[in-house]
Length: 352
Image (cartoon, rainbow, N blue to C red):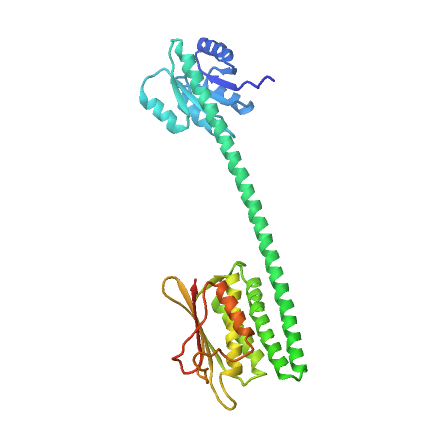
């Protein structure tokens, strides 16, 4: 298939040179239109489309620099190669500063056409590369915009999923609470309330995620505040209204880590509510999440109650301890108990 020849507008007041250059450039693959002065050249460029323009400097009435300025003002102005018979570098520099892409020294030697063709070819190559770059940048920009739109839609969907999951877990927690109130067996009631606390720990995660712009990470201060409030309400009906104090530093964790930590807090607080203080005793439960050494976090859940004998496990069925152990392992850690503390102090350090 024959390729379209690039269109060249050659502007020069030397009609003889125009004819010679037209023939030479046409032999070299260009379709050439000539103009005998700057004004007619600007007019020609305004009504026709050219791929490149060669412009002479010395012309009567309107010289090359004046013509160059007018050509540059045209919509979608093509690249312009400046042609001058002067060897003064100031003219070439002035043309380049004014927007010419290259310059060629006019001469009667045979190499003028070779030099002109080389400059024209390079100008066309530069234009083609610029167009390809702009096209690639536009395609990349469009792809990024599409990707951002997809991500935005996914975030909306994820928030909606977390919203529905949180609502479903809230419904399940309510049903468990109702069931706990309906059964007479104390062991069954205790097991159901423990289950409710575990559900609440996970529910609070999803509640935080659907109200957050970031569905991958959880603000642990806000999360633990909501969890403690939920536990305070759900446990106060079954046990004395023991205050739960929270001290959580500014910490952000991934969703999986937040779930594991929340379940551990729910288990420890529930256990403390049930076993830390005897009938008629007053006290409180304290939860703290702080930064430790070497990029670690430290969770402490403690009370000032009766504690438990050294070498024995905290009271309960044992299921809670298994849950705590599994969650601690998922955080690459383990739970320890401070034997020197008056009541019970559970400590867990884990990587942030």
